[in-house]
Image (cartoon, rainbow, N blue to C red; front, side, top):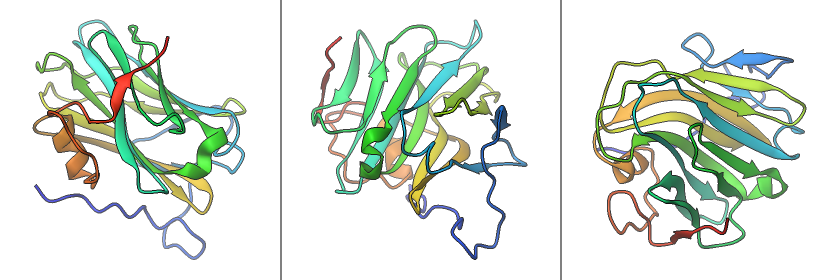
Length: 212
């Protein structure tokens, strides 16, 4: 499977498309508005919280992300099994909070300059077909809210839901909603995360249990 291009959309000055900014209230990422750009404050203060609200009947849906830092370091963070998994390097700015019904990822924006790009993916821990539904919610400093509906036909595999790029000191979020056949490793490779060393289709060599 060929890797997807990892170049972010042209959102710098002089770009050929309009820049869609967050606004007071809720911004919905859909086919009509697939990208949104956070302000510099939203990209650098507090935390960027990514939560998943899911209805009953979806299945054993889990949330994770693959990230790349400016140093080139790359790995994954996810909830699976009985433990939340985090990268072994304590300087990594992405952490997992909790493993309850509505899973949540949090980016520590005090280290925002370290973050180059990441993808957020959803998968079945038991590798079964998932009945998609619910919404992915991104909350920013100042109370802005970005929603991405998770409605889709039932499927197996890993669904890459959202991507994030750092462009000119600001974060650009993009609706992906693409299902990749296979496991987490296959989804990461499809999106150009080829510097990760894997133990198996889901676990990287530098994941370890987090301290709760």
